[in-house]
Every structure is written in structure tokens, then in C-alpha cells.
Amino acid sequence: MMQQRLRGKELARRIVVTTDRARQGVTGQGVRYVLAYSLLGVMFMFAMLLVIFAN
Image (cartoon, rainbow, N blue to C red; front, side, top):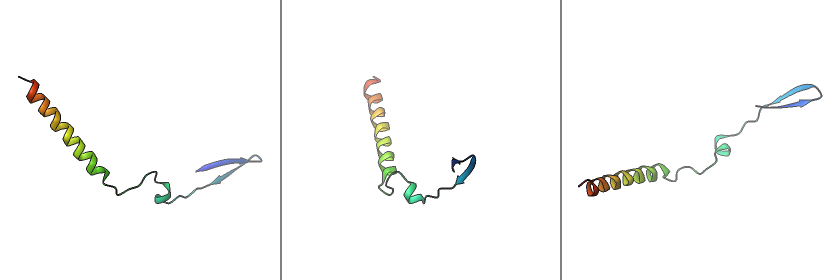
């Protein structure tokens, strides 16, 4: 809620924005899958490094 002072009286004005207008980015681009695959890839690489250098 945004409030402004107007000649000693408070004027309260409610700004209503739809979810599509308020959203900062584009949805539905498969970001969660990229995150999941990259996380699994990093875990796999750390496991490989552990196997190689644990001797």
C-alpha cells in the first residue's frame, strides 16, 4: 500500500498489479531442469574427484 501526505491528511491508495505484470522474469523456460541437471553434474564430478584423489 502506498501512502502519500496531502495537506495534512493521509491519502491511502492501493496499487493492484496482476501476477503477470509483477513478475520480473519469464516463466516456463525449464530453469528447474537446468538447475537439477547441473547440481547432479557437480555432485558426479565431486564423486569422481574423490575416487581419483582418495588413493
